[in-house]
Amino acid sequence: MVAAVTRRFGDLDIAEEAAAEAFAAAVGRWPTDGVPPNPGAWLTTTANRKAVDRIRRENKRDDKQKEAQMLYNVDPPEPLGAIEDERLRLIFICCHPALAMETRVALTLRMVAGLTVPEIARAFLVQETAMGQRITRAKAKIKAARIPYRVPSAEDLPARVTGVLAVLFLVFNEGYLATGPGTDPVRHDLTAEAIRLTRLIRGLIPQDGEAAGLLALMLLTEARRTARVSASGELVTLVEQDRGKWDVALIAEGHQLVRERLAARVAPGRYQILAAINAVHTSARDARDTDWRQVVALYDQLTRIDPSPVVALNRAIAIAELDGPEVALAVIDRLEDKLAGYHAYHAARADLLRRLGRGQKSRAAYDKAIELAGNTAETAYLTRRRDQLG
Amino acid sequence: MQYLFSVIDDTAGLATPKEEAAIDVFNERLQAEGHWVFAGGLGAPISATVIDNRGEEPMFTDGPFLESKEYLAGFWIIEAADLDVALKLAAEGSKACNRKVEVRPFL
Image 1 (tube, each protein chain N blue to C red):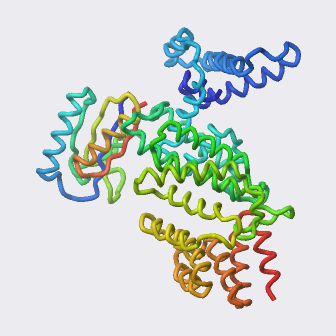
Image 2: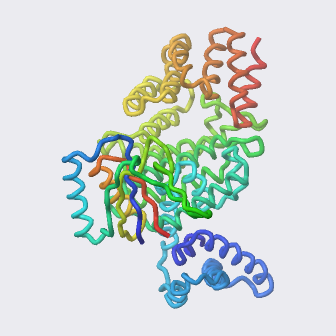
Image 3: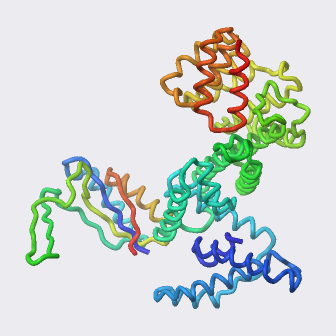
């Protein structure tokens, strides 16, 4: 609804407030008048009317002409699927390259996923007022610089989609490993929204390998969601998860996408390789059956296009399964300069040291990992592991 | 909608003949496609004078209002339907003049 009103009025603030007013009106009227035959259309119409009222009230001299235009420019009834188009337009405006990356994520969460400012502020560990200002500034820039509210042209689409996928991946990751002491360790609302939006993008450009790859990656990760946190609220590692709890339908869909990308015979990008790694994991009925050689080979491939320390860390974790913890530890220790502030680096090190029987060093690494971890379930898991050391 | 493209420079030199030729090609394109409003290159910051006549007497200060390594070397004012069009043109302008370009909308 916000999307539909934004398109008509070209102003996110007015659209947002009008939508809120329409909901308030519905709450007031539906219990007595009964729910209208098409509640969605009723809300959109009401929101449009509220937006016109609002513009009238603001009574801006320069906007007079525009206002008149809008009053008489009644859109023809929209065909089915128009709402999806609106969502796409909203995604592209929120993920515009003229906005800073963290602003894009915040704006997408606010405008597309409908999270509140306090929720977004908590997800990013910033003050509510700071997050509110960031979103207000972004809206002001969209308006003043006239960032267009449309799906980019075919020629610009691939470049713009890359930026959108990056935002959606961040939204998904925030949902899958939520930060902050007050949130659920896994935020299904965020992961589900990220998947839904990625499906939309994939529908827009079905031939794009990375859109398919990201969707597959999300599905194969989401499939393990219910097995990921124990009844006592602890993170359960991939190797220790009850694989019977995995969602077979999501895995089947993810595997199908990965197979499609393999059949395309086009050099895969980052998301496609990560999806393939997850396909290997989800193909093993038992953790012991995991084809670690294949996992390491895929990380080698990923390293060639993304030689970042985080990729090197994940590759080393796979190396530990193939060549043993000693070899992996030597690789990981070389990453200290770059990853000393990253909790996963210390957690991986602690685990390897534990397996090598170096209790004291392992404990110190667990301490560091616990200090840096932001996810409550992960903190609980790491704490138990540390306390189990002899 | 009009946008200001500020050319940001951090070198002392003027545009090379090759850069000037590329700028000419870009300008002709702006004119042919109806984006052109105005453009110009500016003298070095050392040639600037700042005037403040908010008080009783006008004050003249030698030099630019801001001392910094980067300075405004020139500008375009262009007409574009929206920021996407403006950003595309600015990318070409930056390539042509071989310098950074800042895009800002006029009110």
